[in-house]
Length: 519
Image 1 (tube, rainbow, N blue to C red):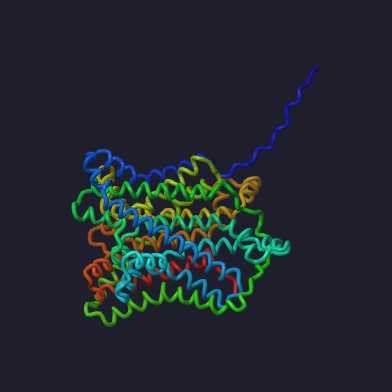
Image 2 (tube, rainbow, N blue to C red):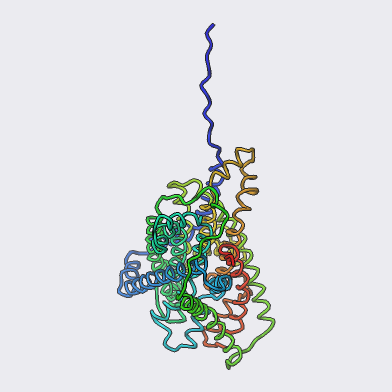
């Protein structure tokens, strides 16, 4: 009697979290962020070509595009220099008072860019134009590079650098050939955030009188109250965003950066600064002084001495409550939406995952007023009940600030070996249990930091909040802008002070979540 033997069963690699479920969730999130882009495209197509070409192909647009490119290029370069240099000094050298220095490097996140511009323009008469804008935005946004780079340095296995040193490499060669390549995702992710925020920045650039494509969109809307005309100029911004995303993707490459474990549990060998200790301390102290102490001092000065200072307690309380409520709602909602996008981009790398993740970045490069107009256009046709509701405003915040949470979560997932999730699945845990019992606890610092970054962005957003906030709702940012644009610096000062005070805990959370530095 013939017998047959079944072919040996090949053990299949456990799949953690069905790609269909996570992919579907991430795709839905990406489609929501695409709404402004779709509206811009439809408006541009419907607008007569003669009108569109007259707005887009004119010397003024070329000048604004040049201004935008110069500002993005110069600021990103300076942010990388300051962010990477400060992170290395704080985490890898024997710099004294490292914890205090770390907090000082994250603290500028608590000072909105337009408050920084208000301080510089009111204290330094010549702080305008390109040089003024370069100083203001660099001081405001370099922590977006510092925070992920410091976290990445903290997570690196020090044994790699020690092995390179044992093989004869100098400290500089170890940094350039061993450490810096592993920092590439953090540097590029932070730089992309800086670039996209600069492309969309409005308040700070308006205060220092440096026109870019973003300010032109706002001016175009104010002068004509025409959505299609504004969208024609915004379409140029979309092209700029696509160039930035493609550039970052090309530089990122396909290298993997996770390792099994974090190496032996030992502190990294700190590079002695020697005679450079005093200059290093002075540089970091000067940076904190210019980015934090100067704007805070300016706000207090205008509050105490400004002729228009009229602090109305009920208005201050109501705007503070509104800012906290909207910011917290945005932080929770956007972080939840970012989780499937980040997970898909890291664990299911491919064309679709890359396309979904890159799509969510497009909204960040658009001015808030363009996003708001698009949501109003679609919302009135699909869900008119949500017009001027907190829900629609939170959706606008999600479109504008989703990459802040995605970058933070993506960096955390890149340093979480995939084998950990697969081992948990092999031991019998289901996808939900793997997510809640393995992934989320490990990602808790990144989740907190991402939520804090979203809170900071939502709490200081201007134009979308002005257009979409519920009737009668004012935030600290909108009230500050209302007074400062009327040159009532004294009346604006209390709102700026409270804005910094409200943002400070979120900045502290970012410092604790991604870059805690051992003493």
